[in-house]
Each structure stands twice: as C-alpha cells, then as structure tokens.
Image 1 (tube, rainbow, N blue to C red):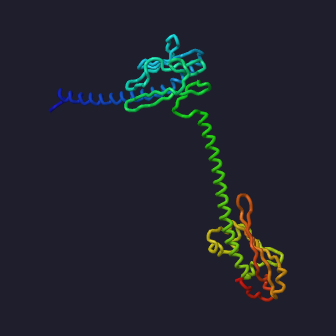
Image 2 (image 1 turned 90 degrees about the vertical axis):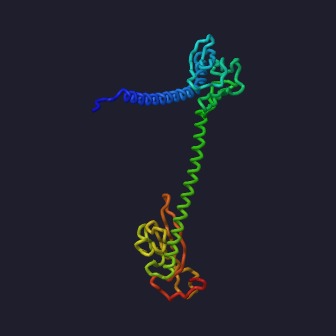
Image 3 (image 1 turned 120 degrees about the vertical axis):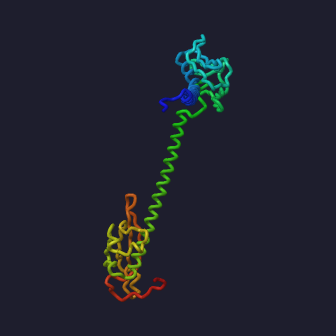
Length: 304
C-alpha cells in the first residue's frame, strides 16, 4: 500500500501551481499597469492648470520641461516643483525640452515666452489608443489660465442648464394648458349629452320634470344618477354624479298666445366643477305646462 507521493508527482503539482501563480501575477501586473496609465492621463489633464496656478501664486515665471520620460514644472533656476513620470506603454508627441512657459498672471506662453497665438496640441498614446490634448487660453489679451479643450466650463454648464430649464418650463406650461383645454372640452361634450337626454324628456311632457311657471327643479351633484337610473346607459362616457341639472319654467312666451294651445318655455342648464370653478352649458325648449293645463299642443311644423 502507498503511503505518500512520489517525487515525480510532487514535481508535477509544483509545476501546475507555478503556472497558476505566473498567470495570476501576469494579470495582476497588467491590471496595475492599466490603472497606472489611466491615472497618468487624468494627471496630465490637470498639469497645465496646476502650473499656471503655481506661477500666479508664486509671482514668478515657470517652465514646463519634457525629458522624454518625465514632465517637470520648473523654476527658472531649474528647481523642479512638480513632476509627472510616464508609465510604461505611454508616449507623448512632445519634443524633449521646454514645452511651455507660465507667467505670474497665470498666462501660458510658448517655449520662447511669446503669448500663444493658437492652441497647443499634442497626443498621448497608450497601447493602441491615442488621446489628443489641446491647451487653449481663457482671459483677455490673448492670455490667461489654461483651459482643457476636453469639456465645458462651469459657466457654460450653468448657462446650458438655465436655458434648458426655461425651455422645460415653457413646454410644461403649454402641455398643462393643452391638458386643461382637453379636459374642459371633454366635460362640456358629456354635459351636452346629458342636456340632450333631459331635453327629449322635457319635450315629451314628462310631468315629473316640469316645474310650475317661474320656478325651477334642481338635481344637485350626486343625485342625477339616482333620479335617472337609465342615464348612465344613455350617456356612455359621463359620470352623472359629477353634474348638476336645473330645469327652469320661464312661463308662456308672448308669441304663443295666438297658437290656441298652452305652451311653456323651459331652460335646461347642466353644470359641472372643474379647475376650482363651476362651468355650465344650457339650452331652451318648449313643452306643455306642468299638469297638462289647456288643450294639447298640435305638432309644430318642422319640429318633432
């Protein structure tokens, strides 16, 4: 019976472990290098701004010097104040030597000390990717602090937000007005449907709907559906509880005396509440007096 591993088996296990550790170390190194390169690109964006700020705070001229593998912000005596090393796999399209100069007001000048007439551009290559950096100026007289041409300034962002807010407010007002007018139009259409329904019953001489002359019969909010159970079927999209109806007897018209029959004029008004106020629509029609007093009215020409 075997009680342990042979030398060959131990060597095979150690070889497998060595391969696993080598792969892990390679991936870890590649991850660290990628993070180091990303940190360099972010630091490169702020280096020009920091150099201009340093020149303004110290009140002296500074230079940005490129050695081929390192960027240094130096004083005129060669003392390095800030440094940024290029990590492995990163290259810049800059020529070794003085890249730019910074004057006490925070202005940026070219390598000869002259104000920049056009933005300073260079590229940073990381593996197969290339990033373009553009150093331009803000401020008057062709000088000022450095501005990266990679985004918007705070003022530009605030202005854009303000303009966008005004546009949204205007669009919101138009939308709310449109919704309000649509709701009013829909409620008025339903009120007209109720008006037509009651008008047909008044013209038909339904005694329960005909008040005495000079008075009115009112069906308040919430009672219309109970008083007219068939109304929801007649008016498909209207909720009767949201409407109030007033049927007023305006008496016999003066011109009706020559007809030889008793006729009263009725005003039917349908109201509803919307947007904090009461809105109404109304119509007039003719029918017999309440109780059927007087001879029955013959059919009027052209009127059913």
